[in-house]
Image 1 (cartoon, rainbow, N blue to C red):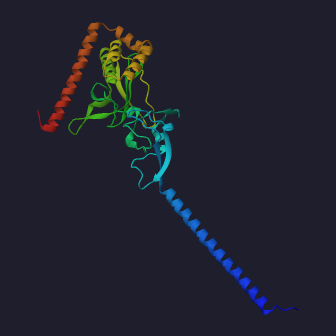
Image 2 (image 1 turned 120 degrees about the vertical axis):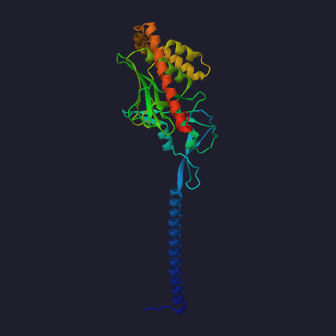
Length: 318
């Protein structure tokens, strides 16, 4: 059996040692790499977890312009420094849609409250739905001739409806948030405060006169069961011809709204006004006038009485 000379033996030993050392270095390198990858993955997961989805405008919009999903893109921002009130795409979708009782998805217009530059992160404070939008002709108006639901509370949402003695029933003002009139710390049982636009004020004036003239008619409010999900009902009451003419010339009503209203009223006048017109035609003019005077007197007396109660509670006036 041949034996290795000392030089070969030493060379082989050195080779084996080199392989072992290289293997150890490789294992250490793999371990370090694995640790770094694991650490980076953990940091990435933490970074992702710390991020919040936001939506950014891709183009500038002006105050009152409609904001739609095609004008938005999704980005991510650190949750700790994200703009307060920033909304996600899902939250924007909830804002721009409603579901009716049949489960149908109904679109809701979302408007910009202010001018918003491109690349701005959207917040809830920048947006408003069309039904909540404040226009130049919006006013607070008190009404005390409407029959209210027994359990109506401040802040609830109602439709104003008008029912004739024949049973015909019309929607006058849809989806209005109610404020109960404050009589110095006590809520009024009769008077509510609604935010109404100029055209809505004229329509309400028309239906109040109709209600006063037609004995047995009923001007009342109905509550929404879930106003956040329920869409705005479509008005079916058509005001008098004189009111439609007034709306068509009233300079306080925005042109677009005025044209749309007059067009709708003219198209539906015979269909929806016929019931009211027929009821009025059966009443003589003297009876109508007397009923209007009586109803108006009662309305004024209620308002004066509640005003007196308010002043007494606030200032001790008599």
